[in-house]
Length: 300
Image: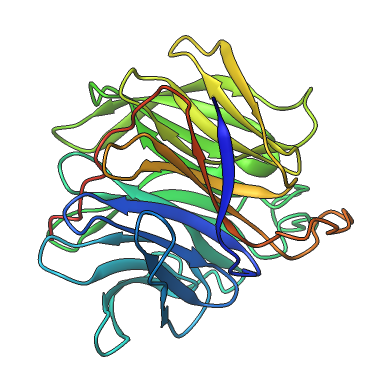
């Protein structure tokens, strides 16, 4: 039987990025606009909180200890003990109106993360566009170099890979599309972008995503109060109702990798009132009969 439980009543402003680490047997997640990182056990106990200097879009643990954090002002290494950051690089240092958002590590230990405009729905006079497509997708290599993979993005979300490493899935949340790229795991290059799934006829839109051991893609339907599972061919395979409307991201974890952790937001968006009493909490869905894959660490 499927059961959804509130694990941590965190009251996050913008909870995001659940990350289960197999070696630590701990779950991490962030409050993006509160500039906080959280950590807890599989059952939601022993909650710890860490602070970063500015808005955080995503994070990944490092093999050498600490983390890589995607902040408003670039990519940084993070020391949990000192709660300090060290800049790696900021490919958009000349774009003050953008910030880094969602990101994950591929199975060669590279960190892939994208950006978005703060005021993404504003008319972009320089480019003659509305909304602002100033976001891009980047790859951080283990030597600290940063490469641009794609551009023309409104709001970067949900990067994740097929089990065979040949497909990179990626969501542009405010374009309401999930794309698939051909991915070369040896070089970290992405090509042949095409539409994998569309939320344009749905209530809500795609946000954070993950891939299960069978190669199916799970995504949070933010503003839509559901978790969706898509088959590798893009067919909608499963719909799991959720008790709050503004869920933001998903990740399999727990000792058997069979719990689906879900983050949610507490702030109002798009004029949608926040009436749910558990808004901004961390949830876990059990009984799905599905397992996830171990999340890799950044190799640099």
